[in-house]
Length: 89
Image 1 (cartoon, rainbow, N blue to C red):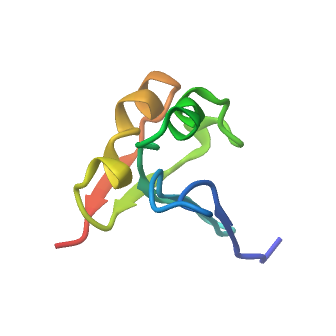
Image 2 (image 1 turned 30 degrees about the vertical axis):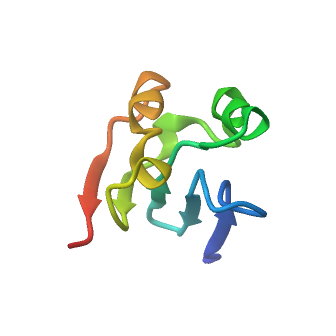
């Protein structure tokens, strides 16, 4: 398979919980790994099951260090992520 797929998992219809999964033939890259913040219905999304197994993520690229872009990392590690994390500076 030579497809490249970009799937938005957060920050849709809101400005919080940024997570975008980039699937390539070689790597699964998570761009940002943010917490949903704000009203209760948004915060509750942090406890919903992921659309993918955390151990399948090869690396995370963070665009910046606000909680809505990086705050979900501890939960992702708890769920099995063992990859590298890069930060754009």
